[in-house]
Image (cartoon, rainbow, N blue to C red; front, side, top):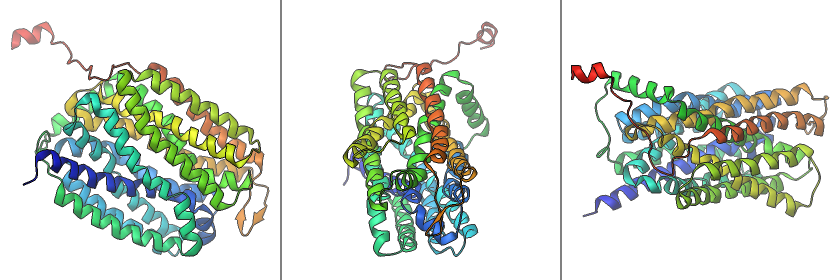
Length: 426
């Protein structure tokens, strides 16, 4: 008979597997951007909108997901999410035109939007809070295998087969993982099974009204959002068109970025927990991240080994924003960990949803009419304008890190004092 600890480990492993697939869906458009542009005969703005539909619905679903995992538990929503993502992935892979592809991409975003917050809830319930950042980092390290798969492996597979078949296969896997979540997750200890709307609304308002929540949200918006927009779509076109790399070499850069991010999530979380500090690690990583944006804005040609190293370093630095979930959780009531982390997570996905099409629109405005193999080609100066938008948002996130409260890796939330007249009434 399995122990409760082993049962929790299996449940977390299944959710992490679903998280791997959600990461793949999130960043796959970057690896097949040229194929999508050719298949649907679309411009940069429309391509940005296609990639961003995932982020739109993901953003909208963060707070509802936080409420659901704090009340109903993760089991039901992970099953439903897996089935919805499966339908969306199949539709995306089989779409004959852009409109149906948009619907499919939206369904994928809706389905996978529940995975991350459910994972955070399981970690919060299963592990000591002093190990929270380390466990989140470890889970993200494994989860980022999905983003690595969306780089070089996806580019290589597409070279010999079709991108459509990849997403039909991902649909089958999504359905299987949804069923596995139903079989192995138990909505037991620490999770309410009844819904009290008054408690939900008061809890959510409490998180939103807490001023100490918002610096973490803005850091997530600035650093996480610029990461999602760049790595999720525009990094590959930038490297191919500005630095004249082949698609496979550009995909190698992307895989190194994701690998650096994966390792960085574990390294940043472990370092923060060991130092018992959040703020110095968060701000230091933000400074390095913003500095590297200056390199891409300069668009200087460099040996491929150097650019590989810089992309890996950027991935490491980007991972600093993973601490924002711990920062938000530790300044809000422990039983509202789902809501506090979901509100924070919403910042990055909102930025990703806005920035992907915004960069595309910027590129289209500067387009000089050049087509290469039926795909629009943009000048270095035009790409610079698009990247400047991402760099500015990233800088905003770094500045916001200076206002994050130092929690020393423990929950510092205190209930508001009871007014004198209330004491007398009691």
